[in-house]
Amino acid sequence: PPPPSPPLWPCDCTPTGFSGSIDTGKIGCNRHDRDYQWCYVVDPVGCSRATSSSVYGSDAAWRYCGTWFPPSPPSTPVWPCDCSTDGFSGPDDTKHIGCDFHGGLDKMWCYVQDPDGCPHDIPSTRFEHATYRWCGGYGKPPHPPPALPPAPPTAVPETGVLVIDGGRGVHAPLCVLPGMEQVAAVAGVPIAAQCCRASTCRRSVGGRCVSGEFNPDNASAPFAGSTYAAALWKCEELGLTLCNQNCRGTGCFYDFLPVWTNISCQNSPPPLPAAPPSIPAPKSPPQGNMTGPASPSLPPTLPPLPAVPSPPPPGSPPPPPPPRSPFPPSPSRPPPSAPPRPFPPPPSCPPPPPPPL
Image 1: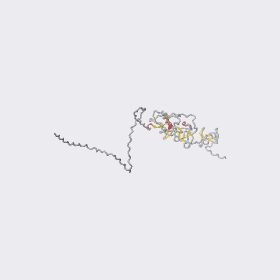
Image 2 (image 1 turned 180 degrees about the vertical axis):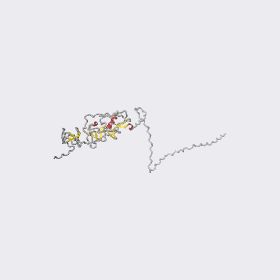
Image 3 (image 1 turned 120 degrees about the vertical axis):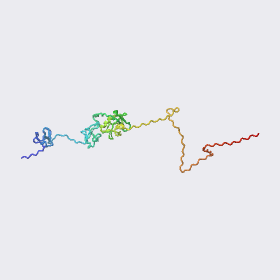
């Protein structure tokens, strides 16, 4: 008798054309009107690798077989520094897909897929976990980037905001009050926008100045000042806020310009008191034929004080007595005393005898 046939595996190609209880009419592994080899399996329920038939439903199933399969797209390993294909950089959804001139920068850049595994990335200033890198070309985009949407109308707060000097101490502070939303310059000098994260200044992000780079050596170079609404909007787009300081020495040559702040005018330091008016010197009357204003008269010169003799050093002999005068000393008058008593009247003389007759 012939040897018994080996038991069939559920995923074996059917030798009778039956896949489960369905007679498909397709026997064995063949192309079966396709450009690749395939077959119906013996047991569609027990074969987990088989695919339900699009003709017979789940009652019949098929799989690839033989040595030739349809080509599949090659899978490329993902490098951690690859540009994000869905906008995610780590857990942060940046909404920037692929390598492009994002934000109108003149260099192509992208957010990376795996910030923790990429050694060449730069931390983002807008997202906490995302990082980015430069990619593609470094030239100008072939077409100008689309214009950014206009900044939303933002009114100046009721307490006003302070515009201060950028760092060189040449611009006086200016309090911008409601109704001054169009102010973008102080005394003809444009006001720059600068942003902060806590106490860290950010005059530039990603190598690009927030208000554009100012050239102090070329006064004719174009540089547009920012209004309060534009400065606030620029900082919010970068995930930052306006600063409470002048950020002196942090780049973009903004030290030469006045800058916007988040300081209320009520919290600004009081101005220095004005100097008291000078008292004019008294004028002297003109003398003679002198022309022009007369010089003030000077006080008369006082005679020099007599020299005070210095005391002799201790242990020195006493000074000699002053020389005596050859003239006798004049009697000194006694000091005045009580008024003198009246002298008694002189005694009366007897009358002379009468002459003889």
